[in-house]
Image (cartoon, rainbow, N blue to C red; front, side):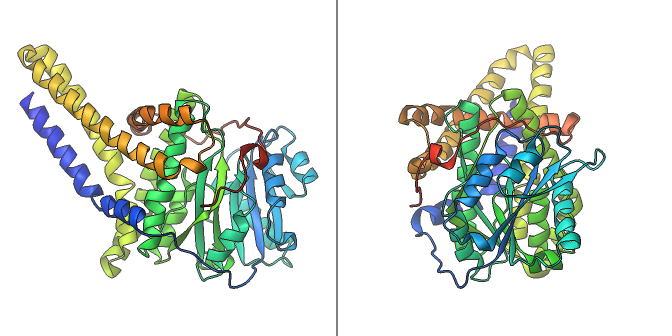
Length: 420
């Protein structure tokens, strides 16, 4: 069992070595003031929404797009009703979107739907030209200043911009709150410091903007892995492009309430991370070696080590536990002591991460004070459950499946202007 203690120490040291640079991110986030931009021009945008059986929520998203304080004549909205069996297409059209219906049971996933939608624009509406494209999910809601704030950053020469990802059902339970703090930390403690330090941010699923010229440079939208957002980010970074961050553009999305559904979703993310490394990792390493691009290193560190080291740690501890029961019962105290100390230290680390995010983003989180405090204590358990998702991703069968969204709120139901 002493061997297990040594192995756990080595794994912990490797984790620290891989992620120590994020301490610099933490200091930068706490000490630097928010960057501000002034719009250089009013750009013309297309909003792209891939929706599969989203009749319950898509109307609210489209209303929030139409409720922007940005000139309405500069925003066109397009929806791909992807293999829908409900009234998504009808509702989207009634709310002013141009709708294209897609029927393809073989090529399944958001990446294929976006490729289909962009191809339709190019081939059937060639007279429509845009400076950039927004990508949203059907369950999203936009703060009324969203496009205005994104335009400020975009019009200053940034070809790709990601936004502040908030949660519209944060207070439902410990799982939705866990997601909420996870994405808020990603926005403010990863993407904001990256932007300050002039390295590339990463797109996180939804709520991002990219230039038409960037789409041309990349040869169209060709990102079809389980995590098409991460593949898109990796490809841009490997090309030497930088994704900027706009912390004043707030998007809200719905998080899964059920534990099983959450594990399935996160195992898909992790499987997608591994796919991205397999497909784009070589290009990232090449660019990093040739140019010293820190964004490539950052991208690789946020995909490979966390999966490999976590799964390795779980497997090693399980094997050593079995051996301890069968061969060295007298040393079980060492095993349990090692596990207990490691668990307490990990819990405290995760708690501090969550509590710090909660404290700095307090005013932007829409639920009661009591729930915010309570869910700060459950956040570590949400993070620990990534270990289960990692095992499912590595050893189970993972494929893309749609997640049903039912939180039909308007932006007015959530709150008013939450810009700091």
